[in-house]
Length: 350
Ligand code: GN1
Ligand code: MG
Image (cartoon, rainbow, N blue to C red):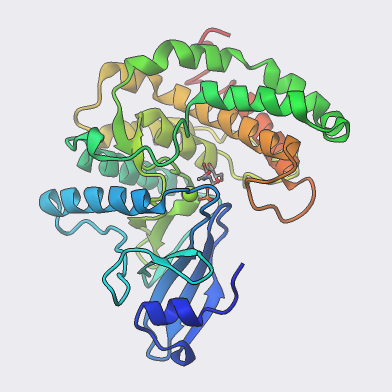
């Protein structure tokens, strides 16, 4: 991780000795910083993780496609804007071959890791619904699949099985009970395989968690959806699923007190209905499967966190040994709670 920002700051035409740089947010993949000039101009600077995002120029391309389309149909829509380098590039590659991007900072905004209010969940669902609606007429073939098979549950299940087959005896032992509980839910992948091809591919956000939403500090309305790195073709299940995953429970995804992992009454309904209400051309099959999106994403996230633990934590940033195992336990608990949720219980073949 580079700590000398001189070269990158200069690339954006700013003067290093007139800027302060400090870490921002809680991303699991990229490194994010807030740059503030002595004249109080603020920018978000990110060092992209190119081990994961191997073709960052595709991220910039997808953003550009979405931005120019939305500008035509909703010119006032607040979308993240890239700040180009002095050479007019959307990305900057430094002399250490690290890739950087700068975007605008939204003043007077706040973002949350968890929510205590159903009204915010509803507003967030509407905001992601509006975003999907704005992109509903765009040609999906204009977009790159930034991370192939990103939300392909079948692929995630296979990665998990491989990780189990190759893990150290020590990690397998620590995770044994959890592996068995996740394996008892493999029907979710079978059901996914049956239905996913019946849904249209659209352009979706694909990281629609609450921490990727900026709210206005005063009005408490959604100002902007951030983190468009995974904007790509997929189905509506991805975004509704991540909202259910991150908003229906009061606890964060790495909460270790599993007794407080509960689905709050009314939240899943508020998310599903708020999301669907904004998408005029939503098809009946999509609408019917929205609650399943929650099962799909929570199960997938449990598999992904546990896969990373079994593979010695190479993918997600972790803050302590066993962090990924705790996250996976958390998500598996959330899954078992979600299976009892009225919109889901008894609706899918166990
Ligand atoms: C990752 O880096 P961040 O926090 O935006 C991940 C998502 C997961 C999420 C779990 C590219 O997102 O898929 O849902 O963590 N992004 C990637 O919170 O893997
Ligand atoms: Mg993300």
